[in-house]
View (cartoon, rainbow, N blue to C red):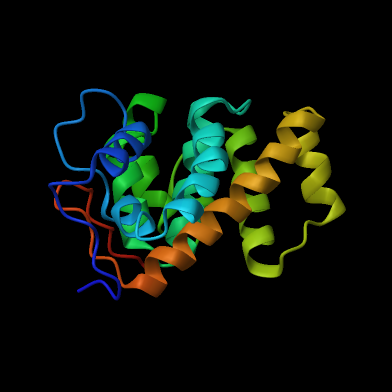
Length: 188
């Protein structure tokens, strides 16, 4: 049970419009519980929408790279809610298949799947940032072989944003969406 109950339909007209903006067109299910909780504070939800939508819909990183970052950050945070939502909806069209998705939840993500050199550098950087909130020069140099400055800045924000989203979902004790992918068992 969530610590703050998500709004349930019928929604007020302004809330319905706002929630529909957060969801891709034609989605067959209700807006995510996270969005419905955030709309208990519409001003906060509105401010969060701008950054979240910008990272997902208008970012410079390739979609697969973005989803690798999101999957790894949410997995390291133990956020089955957000990992599952992205694994079910955003990761497959971005090219992140089941084997690679499962690998993002393993302690040694890099050794758990056949990653490209670019994605290996990305995963090492995410692990460093998430573990220490710092990035070594060697990790930065590895990333710089694949990304320009604008994409490097976006990558740093993306890691921080999904760490925040994970903290929010975990702090609220959000239950996984019924249609979401199930978080895989991890191997020690």
